[in-house]
Image 1 (tube, rainbow, N blue to C red):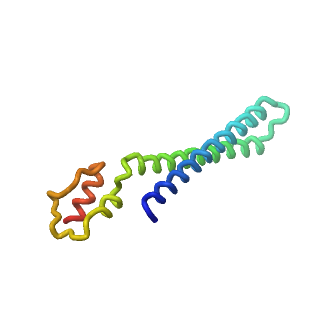
Image 2: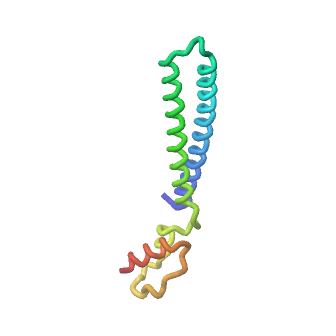
Image 3: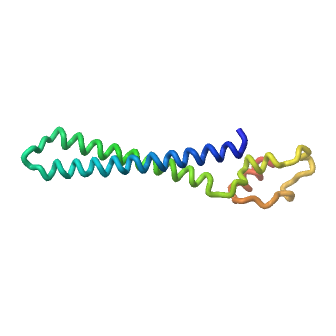
Length: 121
């Protein structure tokens, strides 16, 4: 898989997660309204239905949090410049005998630089 395809796929995943979060937020709001209506109508309070509604709201909230965490991880993974370790190493010439730590090129993050140094050792 090329770097370009990799980033396009991650963008699609990011957009999909964003849509899923928004859809679950809408579902959560609708379920919260149902729950409020059930609480207002004291003549027909059914503990089973209340519990079911509470569980549904809780499950939706958990899904939203889970999707948000995954989205945040995706954004963290790609918040740096696209010059990743894979891209950086793929540009190293085939003849690496002459390369030493002094030939390190400036990289986009300290993390990538440290990985490169580890590979040289």
